[in-house]
View 1 (cartoon, rainbow, N blue to C red):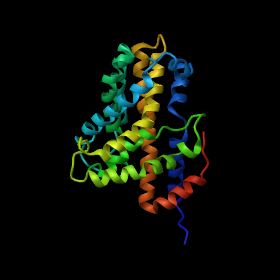
View 2: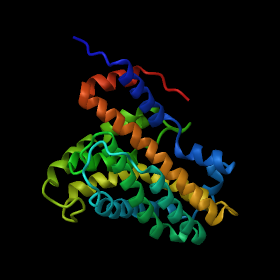
View 3: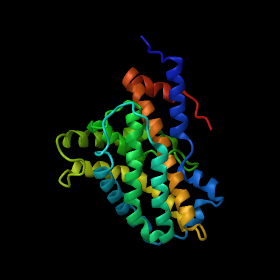
View 4: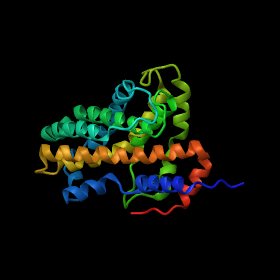
Length: 265
């Protein structure tokens, strides 16, 4: 017997797909600054691509250790998106003032703020943030970048990204039961973080490229960070809407309908 979603749940799934598939961070930043991100990419240091992986992975590890555990586990509680955006804007303003050199210091702070905001959204959508599965799902959001014109849909679509991370998520979840989330002796968790960092690093590079464009400065650094956290709040809202529907109908049912829905925008 086929399972049919209610009209309201179908609308929620469409909202989720609209958030998850449109558009990528680069498009949002370009729309704001009026200059293609590519111009900023040319201004980044030559060794940037090698360095970004290390900076991003460290930021995710530090953020995962600090961001979630101070929150009360009250599923359904309203999320505080505005306060988290304000915190991200302040850290972005500092980073923008000091330029690219400050990114290694600023990124763990802004990533922690974003991860806390993501966990806040997860809790609002009925997740228990004390559950290992939810904590890993929060980190998973950083791998969800939306789409750009250069993306291959078979590799960058929402469910494709989740499928690519699935084994790492399962391994990390099994390994860290009863351990702290960033136990340095947990190689399976580090492997999961590294996989997320690969995709998150793309967004970090786009952010850094925007901040590298001359004359943007500290004020624009704050605004770019606001766009940055707003983007991942959208990814989180879509991700946890989908997970909520999966808990109600099953992953297979929701994934099948998700694929059939139009990609709007």
